[in-house]
Length: 336
Image (cartoon, rainbow, N blue to C red; front, side, top):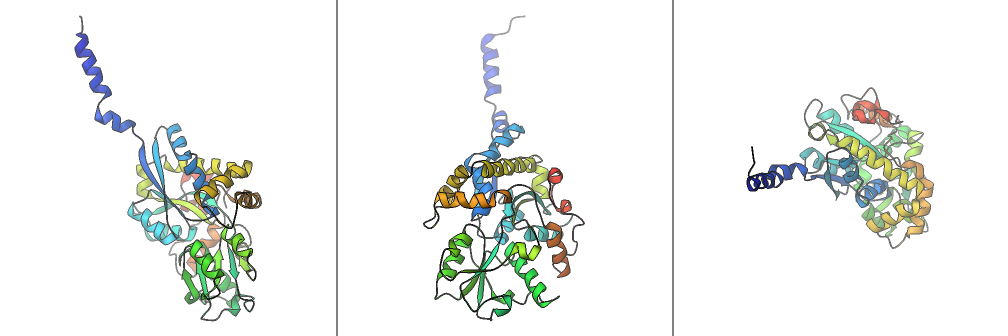
């Protein structure tokens, strides 16, 4: 039986041009939330080198990734919960609050991948302030948000100094400011900001100025590394995009490898995303040499943070293990 060639061609063209087929082949738009500073460098690299697109294509679930800037954990978590972004990189404590509060619901939040364990440093500009005990009610402490890794480090340090139940001793001193604004406020002698809980490269920029000193770090408080940032997403998003977690983990792994193996390229990407008048690409490259092992998907100090949060009444249910609050794909990591 002969087939009419014109009908066959018309039918083939219809299949090729089928809107449903074209939609199926089109990359899915995915939004990832990020913030400011070197801590987000793996995400900057993933954006610049299209690593999310690379690994999503390899997984057979192509996406088109866009990275959205936020000033702190609270705003980013709101965006994750509302679904306005698919995945956000923010503090472990904020993530665990949503994991606990929304337990068993579609908006329960789970960690997807670690990003960095960069040290957080409490800086002051006043010679009279030697420790937390020297802060007066008028001495304001700047940090990115009231719910942030910096806030929990301050609370844990306060409890350590003044005893159980005293974790909020300096809470009224805290002012939420994005890193760039917090740095400027610390350096302004007329500002009420007496201290700033910083992260790289803002720490290094501040310490170049006369009179700026370190008071303590989160490493002092935790007795070792603790995760500063982790990507997180809701249960609903992870169920709708079952390959998203593995894609993000692979992207963060490759970005961290680039930082270790080629800090010059990593520094160039950072200065492109966050131009600085005070730190050159060479300065950032040197900094990355110091912090080379502080990037990647592994997470640390999660259980210690959770236990503290439960002790002060912020978590009803503390996880038995760090893996309870992270996706199964993270089980292959060397986290603790």
